[in-house]
View (cartoon, rainbow, N blue to C red):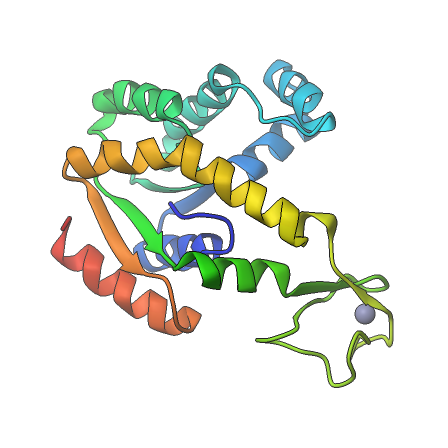
Amino acid sequence: MGPPGSGKGTQADRLAERVGVTRMSTGDLFRSHQERGTELGRLAEGYMKVGEYVPDDVTVRMVMEWIVAPEQAEGFVLDGFPRTIGQAEALDREAEGIGGIDRVIYMEVPRGELVARLTGRQVCRGCQSPYHVGFAPPAVRDVCDRCGGELYQRDDDKIGVVERRLGVYDQETGPVIDHYRRAGKLIGVDGTGTADDVERALSAATATGPD
Ligand SMILES: [Zn+2]
């Protein structure tokens, strides 16, 4: 778990690869259901089209169906789920039958750094290559190194939207973090530094167990 900009997607990929299981993000799961044209996919699409979060019961049904599939028998890494306390309670209930959730990793990054990471992102209009004004700048300002296209900031990464996204995260997901902390399953990992630094910290923390 971690707020937008905390690098949790990158670390979830690395963790899943290291322990030899599949990583699942709800975004990937929604896309897969839409491509297959399932009933749940059509339901989810209706909400996403108008920029709304998919309701917990729809998301939970998709995730549970995925979790109990034979491919996940050896375990799995969930990325971006549970996002709300309703999802967390449903997950705890459903996962009890398969041994429960072992650990919840929370990526700790100071708010100011999250804002800097998110608002500094740029994307090429031509080839969609990602850049960052501070951490991965192009050779020439606002120009793509690969294709010469113009770099721009997506609406999602503008300061007002970023602050709103972080506020929603605190409000909706803060209680989930408290829930797993109380359950003794939460492992806080320092999410600052390079992806390799964070991976080392995560690896060390998961070897010793919850705080
Ligand atoms: Zn480009």
